[in-house]
Amino acid sequence: MSNYSKNIWFNGEVVPFEKGQIHILSHCIHYGTGVFEGIKCYDTPKGPAIFRLKEHMERLINSGNNYNMKIPYSVQELCSGTKELIKANNLKNSYIRPIAYYGYDTLGVHPKNCPVDVAIGTLDWGAYVGKDALKRGAHITISPWKKYQSKSFPASTKSSGTYLNSLLAVQDAKSRGFDEALLLNLDETIAEGSGQNFFIIKDGIFHTNDKNANILMGITRETVLTLIKDLGMEYKIEDITQEDLYNADEAFFTGSASEITPIRKIDNHEFSGGRAGELTLKIQELYYNIVRGKNNQYDSWLTYV
Ligand SMILES: Cc1ncc(COP(=O)(O)O)c(C=O)c1O
Image 1: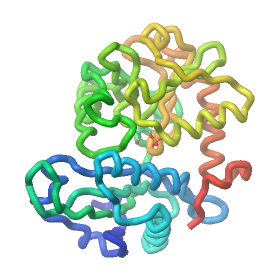
Image 2 (image 1 turned 120 degrees about the vertical axis):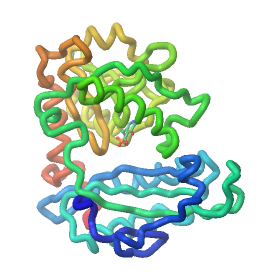
Image 3 (image 1 turned 90 degrees about the vertical axis):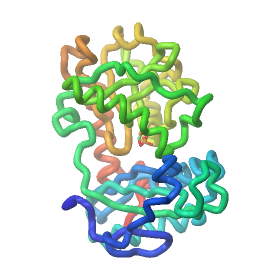
């Protein structure tokens, strides 16, 4: 796997890639009992910097707590481990994947004494939805698969097993030639993408939903809301209906891996004349300047390695 980097942080130590192995009877393999994060490190004029590292590690620990999984490292230890790994791998731009999971002890669904193991990997991952989508906008589809509901799983945690829902949606979308899927809730309001939060813009006002819509409360979503406010523009947080969607001027996805991905078309319906929207591209440009260390106003969001 050429795009994986040469070391892994595994239970507190940086070890060679090949040593990052687990037993086939580990609990997580059978029941998806893991929680994880997706973080990005960008090359900046002051060297590699990790975007909103602390917030991601806080969410990781919180995701674990939702499943009574006590992660045996503090936020600070996980942040230092990540920095150590980036240095050891000599990386400028990379995607960072921390994961905590139940290891090997029992195969009962109740994890009893299964250890909580923690690993951090890095990889060279380009544009998540596609390079072209970042510039020209993605063509997405409404998924026939509904988003799982918070009453069944805590949707605002990032947990391995629940991504089977996302997998069905994105597999279906790709098999029908689309770039991504948009999942609806059981009541037909919009939830989110398979790995992204969702925004629309109507008459210059941004709209996105919140945890009432069974979404992961994205760190990029929160970043974008801050930028909208700082730019003196307005946003509304409320459920988004399909009617809102089809009446929107622009639409876009947000996510650490997807960054700000404009949406040019959903099924047969075009936004902004079938192109990436103007306001979307404005937010995208600001976002790139921030993550690439070219805007000092938001320097506190960067952890320099
Ligand atoms: C289902 C889902 N929603 C939203 C997001 C966006 O979250 P964030 O901006 O914190 O990366 C992700 C990204 O991992 C995701 O998988």
